[in-house]
Image: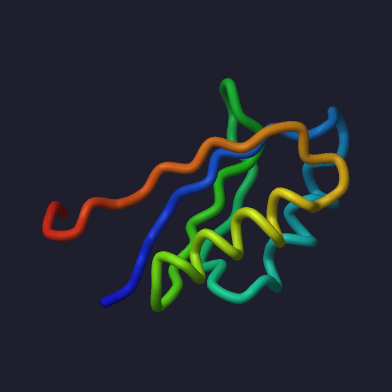
Length: 80
């Protein structure tokens, strides 16, 4: 069983590609792309445990320079 989350990211204007390039190599990152709308970047994260997912988002993604804010959407087990 794994934990999945989608992280919506706001970053400084013009820094989107730099932030994407820093997120891509992180462990557990399955997809990351720029998006239009209220957020700048969407990242899909999958890890073996919820604790690893929390650590990746809190201590790796949210610490990246030029990220202003994040919103994390967790998947619900059994609903697909």
